[in-house]
Length: 227
Image (cartoon, rainbow, N blue to C red):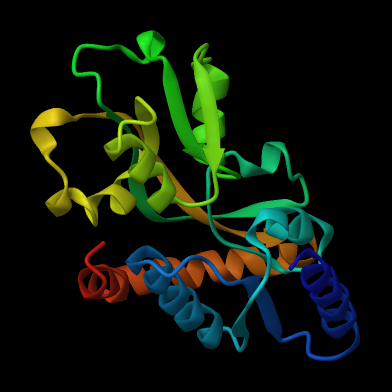
């Protein structure tokens, strides 16, 4: 998979420079209602500007690096502050949606500092940023997806997990909520990011997105995908 992603990165770099500069390439996110909403909204906005948004399969673990290097044209949706580590990515100043970072814990009386073990999703920036501001001294486990996170907690193998609310929401019906505590730690806004080579496009894209909000298109899409 890593070799394939590197080959694709090279192909995208050559393609974007040599041929169609009206098509912008972004890595395919996990298939969630939030991702489908963002893709449709941005496709609509870019189309109004005469651009095409193309989503390609790409290793998500290296997607930020590829976007920062210009192999990808940016990131569909990332939290505020991503430019601290990836300075070539510029924020499009239009909040796409908000979500909550939550603590799912088996210990009903524990504070965050008192937890013995915690599982997070590898490469998830919001979890890493929270741990930077609230250091954790217990056993920290990283896994590749939220399903594994929830399984470790519900099976009692880990005491708690840092999860995003819309990932957790899908599984609440299958959980005995009386045995868990759910605390909201942060509310975060998500933004679109473009590589610095597209800096001149950003004001036009911001205007297009704000126009779509005024026309009710953003609200309609949020209702469609239940955001």
